[in-house]
Length: 486
Image (cartoon, rainbow, N blue to C red):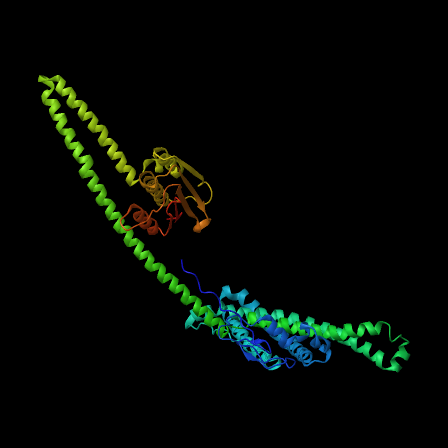
């Protein structure tokens, strides 16, 4: 497996916050001017940067203390008033057009109305981004241009323009947000202003006969600072919403997406090369297996059948003149038949064991363990969990265990061995895992041409993994995983 490269480290710039592509100028209260964001930075405009730009009072300290008289507050109030009037008019037009267009689109009359509405929504998005840049100094990147096609198909593509519908949603939400914010700011500001007048104008206190250190002292900061905080916070929410619904990718985001696509292409190319190699190896292994079966039939069963025919001929000729010789020939022929049947059973088991088809992998592994001269403990309880394994995956697991136990008996010098089979993962990613371990002398290697190498190629042909750990003198552990859907 290949690891994706780690994301570049986030760098900070001494003397002030880093600047993001598409970000506006730094607020006046910032101790230093905007600095270029490091080239490796690929994230979107951070929330903290927008807070420093349009809502510095939320950072506390001196900015909070000066919030009622700060330039950021008055910019926020001005843009809220403009946005309230502007977005209300746009929201009415777009909501009406979208409603009429959608309701009549089945009759085709609403299609041009809907297309015109979404074109206007795109225009609103451009105007709103320009307004935010002019009033707040925040640059919201333009989204990708809509796909243009001639004829009816082009009209239909306009109706499914996601950025245009996002602009419609922005107008509706922005109208509700700005009108609510304007009402709250106006109310709090009026209360704070009245309280201030009562505190500083003696005639007002005398006329109203109030205690200047009573409710006015408490209401004044609540009104003025509350209005400033609400104005700045509402402006921050509107800016973030505009980035999400009206904005497009920054250059850094586009570069990040391009790099991610290149990485995926490289991974896919490596995987394609590996699959070609494993498929070639699988074809070679299948050809070698075919030749082995042909050789076993020719050198084993065929020769025994020839000998059987000879013995039966001897018995037929001797049956009249020498009954004892005929009986001996029949006994020999009977023994040959048993040996031929045994060889054919072994040959069929090497192709695909019948117990695997009839009773499943659990019983097949238990049968292998029972035939092994080394005591083998089998744990296949995990096969009942997760997705069922395909027949090819079960066959691969069976032959892995068969070859591994054969090696244990012939070469490992082990006193015991263990086989564990289970299903890991779920759904399409479920994998059949088999682990064979022994306490023998170790030192096993999957050298080219060996039985373990053949198993490795068979497993890789199924897009599986093959892991062999066999330190000298410490036993051997063979772990194989194949996709259940192989």
